[in-house]
Length: 268
Ligand code: NAD
Image 1 (cartoon, rainbow, N blue to C red):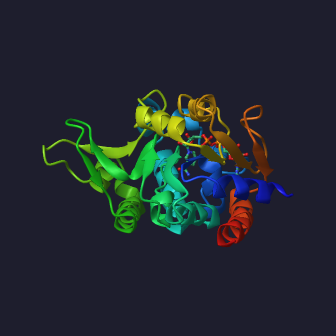
Image 2 (tube, protein in one colour):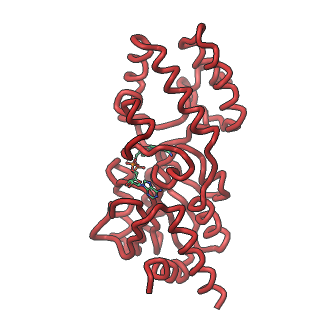
């Protein structure tokens, strides 16, 4: 029996599967991961661009670098859409097999694919949060990116005001920022994620290096509560020791094969 069939059998036997995804699931959508070579993060140090202080420091010293970083980011997100792994998770939800997706990604691609219950532990780039009162505002992805591109194209007048002009003002008069969790900031919906992982019968882990804590502890929590663990990773078995089935392949290639077996098993 193949690993795809093994995974499909485990999924077919449950109505309580939960997915736990990381940057790798979106790699085939054109969004670079943190740790794979050749991506955005080879050019821009995530330690520096991953903290508010770091960004403010670069802003003061080298504003053109911030503009370049934001431009690159807009270019990447304008072109990205859900890939076959995201679409497979949405199909698992429609089949009544998967209830929740817990993601470390900020790209909104699980929601774009059709999953309706997505816990975003590191926030969402397409949501604004007021820095004064904490109120949150969903942003329309395409119009937000269009506005950002227009503002960034004006190279001559680029500055902190450009960035502020991209974000909507809050009702309270406060300034908003993208609702993403930077290094050192509190993770979002963590308790609920741990609870859902504990209540799952199967945890499907896709495209994560499992090194960014506390989110990386979620599969261990699920395992302690006796969930079966299926992991898909293009390179490494990040949860070796607690994994029941490991598929070493890009998730956009592996998931369609798992789904083919699953549809056959369910139709029997
Ligand atoms: P990571 O960059 O640390 O690790 C990515 C993992 O995905 C690696 O183990 C790699 O082997 C694997 N991988 C690469 N391509 C793959 C593919 N096609 N299919 C399956 N696996 C693949 O990512 P992480 O563990 O999610 O941690 C980094 C943090 O950076 C996350 O917390 C996230 O918030 C943030 N981040 C998010 C995005 C996004 O929103 N798409 C992108 C980059 C970083």
